[in-house]
Length: 366
Image 1 (tube, rainbow, N blue to C red):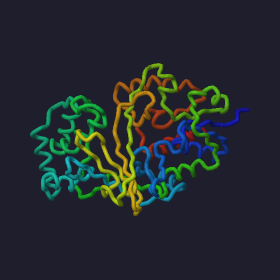
Image 2: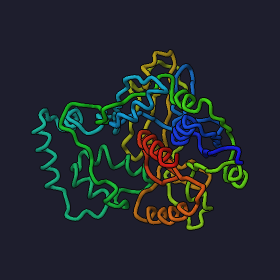
Image 3: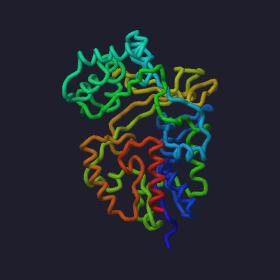
Image 4: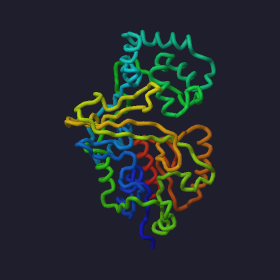
């Protein structure tokens, strides 16, 4: 007899949902994580009475009612609405591109005027068969929006000049002809009151959790302990990079406590000029309408991933997708290992996508 029905590798959202549902079905699970905390990249830590998003801003949003009702079992959500602003050389613009943005750029007031302005710029500057991201973006929104709000941010995010990036990366750019600063169009949106870590703690209640445990260093031990392994780490690392490394983008965070009540007046400010090395500053207290006397900010710097770094974003271009397919074929042959989550499936998942995928997965295997 094996000691556990499942050893779940990774105490992030996918692993926590799987553990919760397996436990409800009477299965015995062990959750392990090589970090010293649960909750993966949605981990929040209290500093100066403020819930700090340690691995970048996480705003929960979904139009899937089942997923929304699911997470509300484990946390009460506030009414936070994501309304980031962009700072370009000290000029402030609303994101996503909407009537407030266009009024600031061109002085236009009506949707008709804004559409005419964009169409005129597209006619003047667009090219047939755009060969790179820059040409594609100008075809979509014209040079003014592109230069101030897309170009520098995108180049920092990807670590390449826009003229070196393939056109297919930007299939569309959301343009709204309303005075609405809500970034997401989803039906449900908010932040769990008291932070995400508390939410994941509730999901993992009644399940054994061991932290600072490296599955790949002790793979045979864990394979012997359970009937099945649920693996949410990097799929290429699991197979010891036998076909080569998949590419990721990584991030570096600089967090500091400031002796002021309100630093930037918004939770998220994007810095869209290339010369500013970080992509955004997060002021965490605004996620929960904080009134603490101090504030905590985080600067977010994108970087090229290398072994040993945290992988944040899979580079889902054609070359990497083809490489992932080879690893996926290997994964299908690992009869007692289930690969899940953003890293296990090499897919850019939002939080609601992760929960939906985990619920689907656990339902299939149970």
